[in-house]
Length: 227
Image 1 (cartoon, one colour):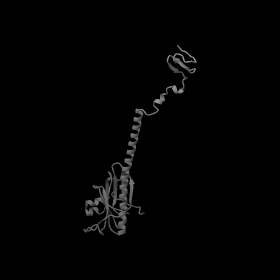
Image 2: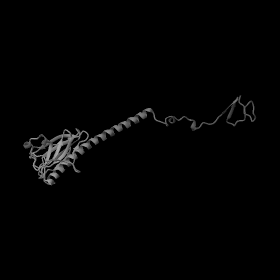
Image 3: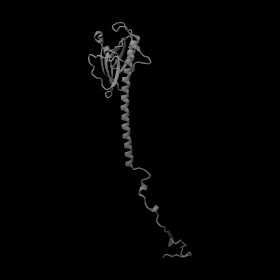
Image 4: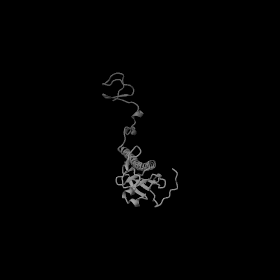
């Protein structure tokens, strides 16, 4: 039985108009608001699902792998370029020393140890007396290639090879006091990246270019006498 009165009756007190007294228990009735409606988005607003996390991790791993591969390829190419530049500068310095000191200068190429160096001295290459010395200064010193870089091809044409009959001569480029040199084509690389260093006989000029070395003809006539 529901009773509304201004006096306390059967343990039922005075309540506002919206209050209902049922027996000994009371219930306050109020109108519904927007906050009472369930919000499905509120359940996932605080985090990510497992599938979303796995997708993000896979994307990060893929990007890291691509970046690492690109960086390693660039590093390998840089090592080949550095090696070719070193041989190129050593050859130019050898020609300068030969003309300035009026002596013979050799650019020694060691394919087995993947290294090169300069030697200088000797008024006559045909002399039995060994007066050569190793060049090691601020401009040139014995150098070994880094990484997987190596001499992939060494082609040298020298007028002294037949006379001296020395295997070592095939791995050395001789620069003469008059500014000339042995004709040479040297390919340096790591199997994927390649550089070629050329020495022209008539002028002793040296040039370097990206790519594999071209086949060197038996006879080369160098008409470009200008430095």
